Image (cartoon, rainbow, N blue to C red; front, side, top):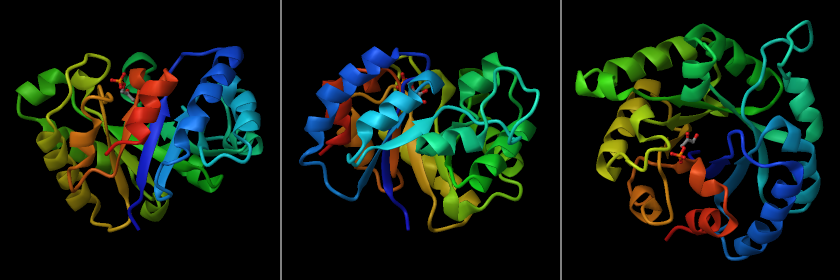
Length: 241
Ligand code: 13P
């Protein structure tokens, strides 16, 4: 069944001390959050253990920002699914556009990482989305369908979240219009052809636009960068109306 999932992606922000301080402000704000909303924090690797400990007993699920496809080996700088699982991680972002753009991740490695996540019972959040140039050239649909086709080879759609993140809307304050995000997410849903996949929108989601975004029928949640760093602002997003 489609679930509502609001996830924060802290990217490369917050030390352990800062993440503890965040939780002290954020967790009490969840008292009246409807039970059916899944709340996830995708934190840097170095924060996973401390956030895991400090989430104990709370409804918030722990997420990581990447996973390697091997269980162990000579892969300097990488982290495996079993390492994430041991700390209590439930979700992992895979194929974020910043990984694709700055760290040369390809659809092939994204597919390997998705498989590894699922093999370790981690729910991957697969990010797809087009650049501004691709949108201007009217290639949005093609780009996204190609990403989905290549990334999802042999992936179990019942254990997957997809995030539509138009690259031009990330960190720019330039949100994709809610109706347009809804349209593209509808296309993604048609392409997946599976009733259970939750599909989020990501890209400049803020307290001021979350209500309109979440009112769209195809949008099952949000993947939030900058506005997830501050307890009151992420709480307002999680408690959208
Ligand atoms: P912003 O919310 O800062 O635009 O980031 C979106 C994002 O990349 C989430 O993964």
